[in-house]
Image: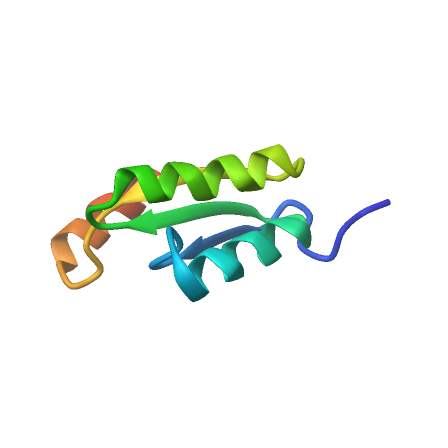
Length: 79
């Protein structure tokens, strides 16, 4: 059975905690490969990734500050 977001990539800014974490988990449940964006809290981002992968989803942490245009450009240049 194919999920609605199968083969799609979602980048969730602030995905390491709070509402962002919930959104990241829901997108992963729908089949998206989730990039969990964070600026400082590596442990929280890793925890979100672990929650997603433990539930059978696909996720990875992606560290950059969304307020830094150069950092955003650099983060997406490798995708």
